[in-house]
Image (cartoon, rainbow, N blue to C red; front, side, top):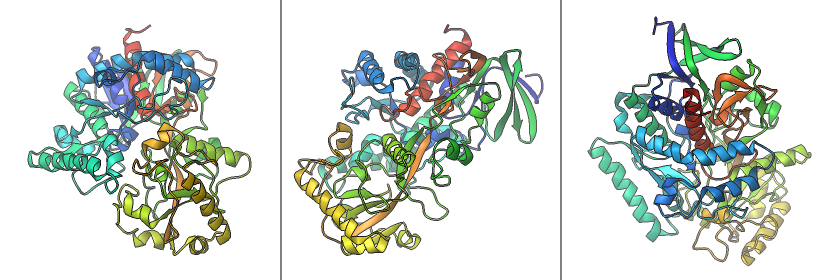
Length: 558
C-alpha cells in the first residue's frame, strides 16, 4: 500500500460469491489478495442459493461410500455437453475437484456431506447417476462471523423458526404429512440443533447461507480484506496485459494494481433486463430472477471493453417459481410440481410439459415454444384439496395451512368447486380445463404419463411421494375443490458470459487469452454448455475454476 487511493496486491477478486474460493486459494499460495464487492453484502447469489455443489468423483462422495469415479463423470459430461462448450474445460473441472475440496477443507471451518439420492438431472444418459453426485455444507454456525454477520447476504427462504434445513432435509420436510416416520426425526433434529444452538449462542444456517458463511469465515480468518459497496469502473492494462482496476469506494476513486491478475466473479446479468430481452426472451417478466439484485453484467461488460468474446448469452439456470405478490419477489418452487395430485397448464388450460423435469430443461422448453411462435404466455399449477393437505407449498405454507387471502386478492391464486368452476374463475374455456384434467387423471390412474413421461426419470422420482404407487409423481385429482396458483419463469442466474480457457483466463473474440484476466462462475460462459448436469453444478464450477485461476495466476499452473 502506497496511499489510500493507490493499492497494490497480487490478486484482485471482483465479486464475493464463489470468488471467495479464488481468494482463499490465492492466500494459501502466499499471494496478497483483495476482494471487491459492488453490493453491501458478501456472498453473492451463492448465499441466496440452495447451496448444493455437484462434485463427481470427489473425496466427499468416496468417504460416504459412493462408487462414483471421475471416469464415469467424464463419460456423462461428454454425452451431455457435446459441441456447446469446450470439452477440455469440462475435463479440467472434473480433474481439479479433489484439490479444490482439499483446499476448502484446509482454509475454512466447513464440513461437507453427500446428498445421497439426489439424482443427476439426466441420470439415464451414459455415465449418469441416479444416486447423484451432489454435496452440501453441513449446517454452519454463522455466529463465528461475529459483527461481520451483518454483511452476509440474506437467503431467499426466510423462516421465523431457527431451523437449519439442508437440501437433503428439505425433501423429507416437504413430505412431513405423508412420511412422518422418516420426516419427523429429521425435523426434530434440525429444530433441536437450531433452538439448542441459540441457547449456546450459535446461529446455525444451511444451504447457500452455510456455504457463503463458511467461505467468509475462512476469508476473515486469513485476513483477506473485503471491500463492500465498492464498484470496479475500469480495468487497467499495460500493453496486452491487465494490470489493475479503478474502484469507486466510499465516493473516492481507488487504483488497485494487481501484480498477478484479476478474477472477475461478479455473477451474470440476471437483472440487466435490456440484455435479457435482447439475448433471451422479450416475454421475460421484470426482475423475476432469484439471483442477487447486484448481478447486472458488470464483469462481462468490463471484459468486453477489452475485446473478450462471449458465448451462451441466451442461456440461464431457468427456474419456474410461484408468481410474486405486487412489489415482491417470486417464491421458490422446487418439489411442488413433481408431487402427485397436481399438473401445470398454459393460458389455454392445456397441459404442456413434464412438470417434474429439471428446472433448466423446463425453461428451455418454454423458450423453444416461444421461438416457434407458440409461446406459453401464462402458467398455472392446478391441484386438489388433498394435495394442499399433504405437502409444503412455496416453502412457507405447511400442510393444511390455507392459501393466503393476499394471493387471491392479487389474482395469483384461484379456487373452484370443480374443474369447470375453476376454469371460469381463471378465465379459461371451462371445457378445455375439464378435458385436460380428465386426460391427466386417466394417465395417472394407469401410472404412466404417455403424454410427457412424468415419473420416467430417477430425477423426477426424487421429489415424488414414495407412498404413491406405481408412479410417485402421478395421482388423479379429486373432483373438487380445486386450486390454481400462477407460475412464472424465474431463474437462479444467467449462465452465458465471457469465454474462458482451461485456466479460467478470459479469451478474446479471436480465441487468444487476455493476459492477467480471469472469469469464473456466472461471469463466464457455462462450462457445461446448454446443460445442467446436476444440482449445484453452477456453484461447483465457480469453486473449482476459482481454485484453478488462482493457481494459474500464481505461476503454479502452466
